[in-house]
Amino acid sequence: MYIYQGQKYANQTHITVNANDVLVEYDVVPGAHPHGMDQKTFTKEELNKTIAQHKQEIDDYISEQGSNQDEDY
Image (cartoon, rainbow, N blue to C red; front, top):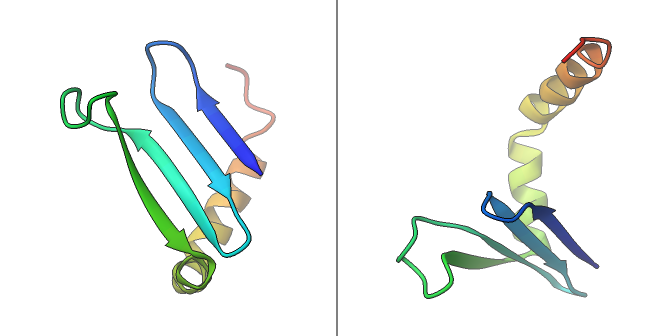
């Protein structure tokens, strides 16, 4: 699975999910990488551990976003 988020001249994130790991490429300070992107590969075990450690924060954020759906922008 591959996910791309971003717009031309804006923050970009590329996420590639493989069988055993997840590759995340993201914007960094221009010049830090030839294309302005850096990357990190996470094992699915690492991600599961991180998500478990922050589960309450994640749940609170999701709940907060759901309650803001009716706001006008």
